[in-house]
Every structure is written in structure tokens, then in C-alpha cells.
Image (tube, rainbow, N blue to C red; front, side):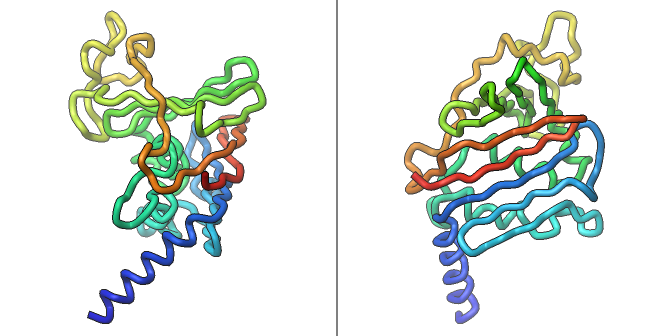
Length: 217
């Protein structure tokens, strides 16, 4: 009974701390595996996490995959998103195995001064767009489209209606983006707290960086 009470108190405290500023610093090599150089560092309240992929355990060394939930959800009970879903997924790329992230087909395209980041996670495609200053606005720069693949799984054929003419449904490169209806990807409308602000993206030599400070509305 005491252990259960202590765990509940600890979990509630973690969520309380997450209401402070959220500072993000991420690096991920999109083109090749660099587990010794890729990282996710984040600070929320009194918590300062420096994380990377741990090949021994096959998970994030500082357990960001789980610990980031204190930021990602508004409370432990309601579990409503405080951030766009695509942002949360993208930030966890550096702390996951390459075998896992390769299935998500992350791409970064440079369009003039802008960056367009795309990937797919369990049948949902995400698009994150910067402005000409490489800034990602959480309110306007994130989009998604659900049920793009046949099954809710890491690897699944594309639904036929989203495949380019003559394309192979098992090849993510055959995805016809012109046929996809992207909708805004935002924090949950009924979340008790939501993060807002700008993140700065960089892309050079195949390396994607995301940095910035977010605050609660």
C-alpha cells in the first residue's frame, strides 16, 4: 500500500514539474546510423535529461521513451496531448534503435529556405514544415494523415488509393502525397495545458537538429 501511494505521489510530482518551460536539443543523422553522436536532451522544471540510444538494452539510456510522458500528457489521469503528435515522435528518433526508426522512413527535404520533414508511424504520416527561417511553429507547422497503410503496424503495405500509378504498395517511396488529405497536428483541444512556441530546425550533411524553448499556454 505504501509503495503504491509513493509511486502515485512521485508520478503526480513529475507531471507538476512538466508545467514549466520545456527546453529541447536534439540531433539525429537521417541518412546513416550514428548512435554515439545522436542525442535527445530536454529540460522540464527541475528535470534535466541527457539521452541517447543504448545498444545494450535496446532502448533509450535515460528512458525518455517513457519519461517524456510527463511532458507529453497534460496529467497522468487524462493523458491528453500537450504537443503535436509528430513533434513527440520526431524527438524520440535519436533514442530508438535504427531498426525501428528505419521503418518510419524519415525524410528531410529542403525547399528554398524551408525544411519539410516527413515520416510515417503505425499507418499515420506526419509532415512538419518550417518557415524561411527554419522555425517550426507548433500552432501552424505540423500536419498528419491517418490510416495510410493497410494495418496498424510498423511495416504494412500502403492502401491502394495512396499509391502512385504503377507503384509498389510495399515501397513507401510509392506514396502519392498529392492524394493525402493532411490535417493540422496540434495539442489535444481539451488538454489542461498545451505547449506553444517555436523550434529551430537545422539540416546539414544528413544531420537534423531541433532546438528551442517551449512554454505552456
